Image 1: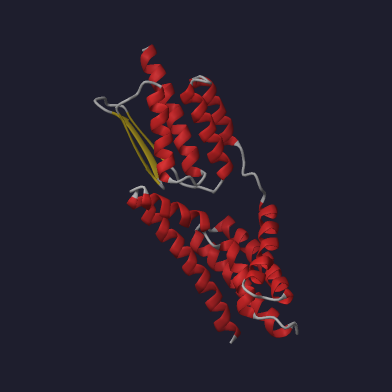
Image 2: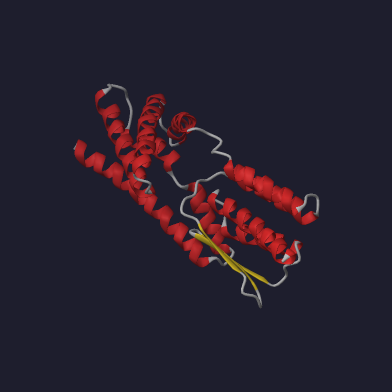
Length: 252
C-alpha cells in the first residue's frame, strides 16, 4: 500500500509538471523529455509519455498504471516554462524531494499571468510604431500604427471574453485596425500610407511563438503536434489577412 502511494505521488508530480509546461506554451519535446527525466530519477525506467496540444498520456510498462490529462486551454508564459525546468532539474539532481517539488509546482500552477490585459495592450501599442518605421514608414505611419493597434488589440481581447477562438479574435482585431488605418491615411490629412500602418499594427498579432514551436516539434519528429500548431498559426494568419481585406473592401 505504501509503495502504491509513493508511486501515485511520483506520477502526480510528473503529470503536473507536464500539464504546466503544455498550458504555458512549451514545445512537445520539452514536455515529454521533462516527464521522462522525472520518472527516471524516481526509479521508473520503463515508462511511456505521449504529449499532444490537447492532452498528456503517461503509462508504465508491464503494469496497468496509466494516466491521461486533458488540456482544454493554454496561454504562452515562458516564465512558467523556465520555472518548471528549474524545479525538475532540482528534483532530478536530488536537491529537493518529491513533496517539495509537488508543492512548488502546485504554487506555480496557481500563479496568474504575469501581465494584465491592459499591460499587454500597451506593450502592443508601443511596439507597433517601430514595426512601421522598420518597414520604411514615416512618423505619421508610426503614429497611425500605434492608434490602430491600441483599438484593434483592445477589441480583440474584448471579443476573446465571449468567443475564445483565436481565428475569430484575430479577425476582429485585424478588421478594427484595418478600418482605422484606412481612416488615418485618408481623412487625417497626414502624409501616411495605410499599408505601412497595417504592416506595423499586424505584427503584435502574429503568432510567432506558436509558429516557432511548430517548426521545433516537426524537427524533433513530433509531426502530428507540429502540423496541428502550424495549421493553427496559418489559420490565425489567414484571419488577419481576411480582417484587413474586409476593412479595405468596405472602405472602397
